[in-house]
Amino acid sequence: MKPVLSIHFNGQCEAAFRFYAHCLNGTIRFMLAWGKSPEAASVPPEWGDKVYHATLAIGDFVVTGGDLPSDRYQKPQGFSIMLQMNDADAGARIFHALAEGGQIRMALQETHWAARYGALVDRFGIAWEINCER
Image: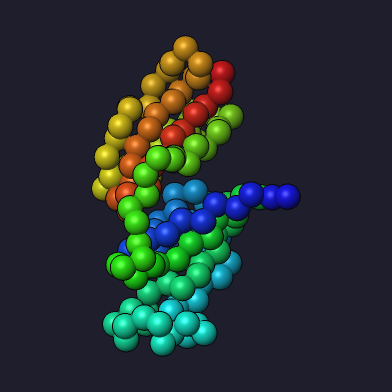
C-alpha cells in the first residue's frame, strides 16, 4: 500500500500544481482538462479548460488533484500537509516560497521539538507545515 494525497480545487488546480512544482522542485507528470476527459459533458462549457486530473511528483511522493465544479467543491479543512525536512535552510526556502501570497499561521522558528517549524496556508487555501528535525 502506498498512500497518495489528492487535493481538490475550485478552478485553480493548474496554477496550484505549477506553483507547487516550482516551490518543491517537483514535476507535473500528467494534466488532463475536463473538456478532453470522458466526463466533459458533465460540466459547463466554460469549465472545459479546468483540470480534470493532474499528477505531481515530488521526489518519491505523488500528489494528485483536480478542479471540482462549485456544486461539488468543498473548501479544504481539518488537515495540513507536513513536509518533514532534514535541511533547515531548504525548509526555510520552501516555507517562504509556499507562503508567498498566502497566510503564515506560525512563523518558521525553533521549537522544543524541531530545529525549525512553521505553519501556513498557501494562496490556494491549502495548509502546510514545515518541520525541520534537530
